[in-house]
Amino acid sequence: MPHLLAIKRDGGVWSKAEIQWFVEHLDDLPREQVGAWLMAAQLIGLNEQETLALTDAMLSQGVKLPTREGAVDKHSTGGVGDKMSIVLAPALHASGAIVPMLAGRGLAHTGGTIDKLEAIPGFNTGLHMEEMATNPCFIARQTVDIAPADAVLYAVRDVTATVPCIGLITASILSKKAAEGIERLVLDVKVGRAAFMQNRQDAHALAVSMVNVGTQLGLDVTAQLTEMDRPIGRMYGNSHEIAECIDCLKGEGPDDTMALVHAQAAALGVSIGEAIASGQALNAFKSMLTRQGVDPSTVERLIADPWSVLPRAPKRYTVTATADGYLADLDALTIGEVLCEAGAGRSKPGAEVDHGIGIQRVVEMGGRVTAGQTVLVLDGPDALDGRLLDRLHEAITVADEPPSHPPRLLETIAAYGD
Image (cartoon, rainbow, N blue to C red):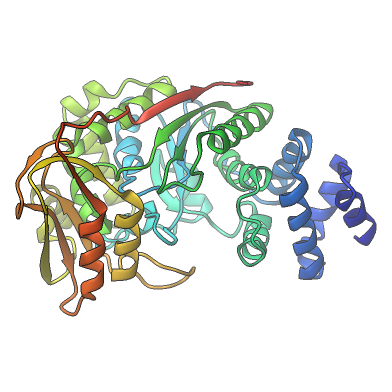
C-alpha cells in the first residue's frame, strides 16, 4: 500500500488491477492509508479510467439485483424541497416501467427521500434483496450487501474533507445505481447556493463524469443540471413534502415541481402525463405504500386527508414580509438550515429527525405581497429558538419589480457530452 500511495502522490495513475486490489482489501487496510489515498484523489483527481475501475470494483464486490427489462431509476444529488422521486416512481410504474429505487437519508440542509417516506406510519424502507428482486416499484434504503465498500469509503471521506472529489462521488453513486438491475438512469445534478455543487462548472464536470462512467457500465444515462437557489415547490420538511407529493399525484402540484418530474420521466423515455391525469399514478403510489407495509386503511386516510395521518409539529409560527412589493427570492440554503436546526434534519449520520417539523410557502414566487403579509408558515416545537425565525425573515427578498426566474432545468447532458 505505501508503494501504491507513492504512485498516486506523485501524480501517477492506478491500474484497474491496483484499484481492484485496493477495494478487495479495504476492510484490512489501516484507515490512515485509506485516508491518504482519498486525499491524494481529492487533490490530484481520478481520471475517467480510474473512476470507472473504482466504480466497477465497488459494484462487483457486492450483490446486484437481476436486470429487468424496462427497469429505470433516478438519482438526485440533493436539495431543499426535492421531493420528485416520490412522485416520479409511481408515475413511471403506472406508465409501464419497473422502478427499483434505492434512496438515502438527508444530511445537513438537504432532505432525504427515505426520511420523508418514513414520516408515513408503517412504511418499511428496509427491504431485503429477495423482496426487491420481485417488487415492480419500490423506494428503499441501500442494504449492506450492495456496494459495501462505499460505506467504508464514505465514512473516511466524511472525516478527511474528501467528500467533494468528483471521481469518488461518481463511484459512490453509480456503484449503487448499477446494482439495481436497471437499464436507464436519469441524474438530477443540482447547482446553486443550496446544492452540493454550488457553481455550474463543477456541476457540469460531475454530470459528465457520471454519464460517461455509467455509459461504460452499460447503462443508458442522462444527466440534468437543475437550479437549486430557491426551494422546490411550496412545502419543505418530511411530512410536509409527503403531503405535497400527494397533491402532485392528484395533478394539483406546484408548477416547478411537476416540470422537473415530467423532465425526468422524459429523459427515461416515459410520458407520465396520462398516468397522472387518469389517477393511475396515484393508485400506483397507494399500491407501493401497501407493498411496503402501510395498512390499507391508513393509505386511504392519507390520500383523503394527509394531515389525518402524518405527524405535524404542535405550534405554527408565521414569517411576514417587511415591505410592499414582489416575492423575488427565497434562499433555499437558509430554509434548509433552519429546518435542520429546528429538528427536521440531522447534522450527523444516525441522528433522529422530527418528521412533523416543516415550512409552507403561502405566497407564489414572484407574487405581490404587502408589508406584514404572511409569506411562510413554520410548523415547529413549542420551544423554538427565535433566532431561527429571524433567519427565515432574512431568507425572504421583496423587490419593487416582478422578478424573472430562470427555468429549473438548466442543461441536459447525454453520453460523452463535453
